[in-house]
Length: 379
Image (cartoon, rainbow, N blue to C red):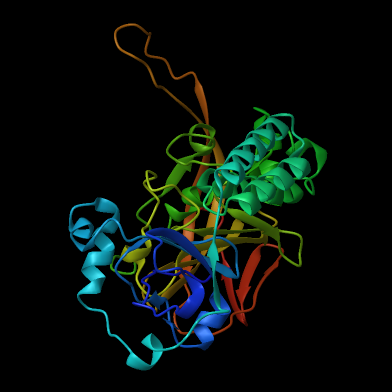
């Protein structure tokens, strides 16, 4: 589900769903049912006192964790609850929703100590199977760990990460043999970028392409080029399982990344759901193809939390150059490092054009009936 949700829970009257003498409990709720009954309004679910955490377990289920022993004053002192306190002040309460009996829509999650222990065992089995590259069986163990204990966050993160990794492998397995392997041969590198938009067997990371996108508040191409030889696989553009990959109808790479869910909160690319607001915070790119003179055409889509979706066509060339990177005075200053440069030679911002049919014919690019041709002097 690509729908992004910032979560507050109504001060719900859950009817008989929860026993009155329980201070710590969890509720598993159907997203669709809550939406139909008006508890969820857009991306918001109004908060109740005692809500400790809310998270999406599956595409259909939201899990709410409560701890009434915390008390109301705890919310202003714990960082995890700051966002709840802020929105609490601006929440609008609907009396008709508050009075509804949601028994049947939500059910209490009861996890025994024995189930928690079994869940942790399943999680470790999953890790072991993953390290043995038995990904299918590892996924089964992660799912079992979550079934035993829906609150097992490590199992949830491990499952999502491995599913993305398997998904990416399915795409890279469609590449021709020489584009599946790591290589330093520039001719092969250039060929694989132009035909599969891959570098040494790996799909070009979306964070690298996002660097070339100029904010709508600015103008011009601010980032002219990036050295793929150093950036691919680097800590700055991490990680290889942080995006969803697929193939277009033309068998070209298409990438999607959700800034609120794909990256950890420690990543520079992470955007909190609170900062994102009511809309999506995501980025996507598709490789549309390459002209006969080697111009790689990429279509990007960027949404940063508002209603505006920035759509742009980027055009790249792959080049080689030598550079120097030395540690003075231990090393001799020498231009002995070969760089693979992805150069942004042109961009076209698609403003108010509606659906655009972009095609590539020989050395020309067409948007609907308008031709774009890169002059030889630029290439």
